[in-house]
Length: 134
Image (cartoon, rainbow, N blue to C red; front, side, top):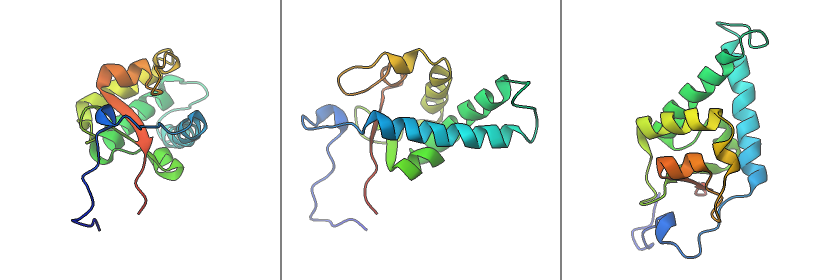
């Protein structure tokens, strides 16, 4: 429950003190999500033989969970979330799917700026932030 007297959260783009979560937490979330994708893809393909299956599940997982909840299961466990850079809100299904496709290409996440926004984040207008405490 939020306190009506608390100031509104500042969007990451407008916050001069914005500090992104560590790369370790981001990588940990990705590893958790990847293991889940391997398990899910096992239901309809052999992930060891059909390498496309877990990648497809990852893209769909990102589209669904980031688009609707701003967190994948791995991000929830790592206490991080993915929000819009400009206003701090959800990025929506289309941008979340695009972010998943770009993440699956592996190169865009390696090209980061000072806010640890990979090319996939900059192209989709998103950023990884700390999740608010419950």
